[in-house]
Amino acid sequence: MKYLIVLIAALVAQPAWAYLDPGTGSMLLQVILGGIAAIGVALKLGWHKIRAALGFRKKPVADDEQEQEVS
Image (cartoon, rainbow, N blue to C red; front, top):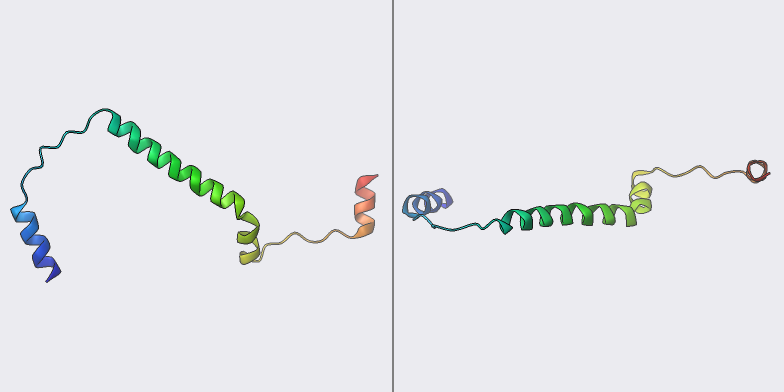
């Protein structure tokens, strides 16, 4: 039934005669770059949770090894 509706809509569709001005491309680029930046910030803020969920953790440093690194 869905395919029939899509087929009818495709056959009856009229041209939109729409106009895309030059600013549309830069707006689309801003949306894409903003989305990439948002994903990067979300990963950065939740990186320790992601590592914990995957089972990657830093090995604890023993006290005597820590003192040797400081001196």
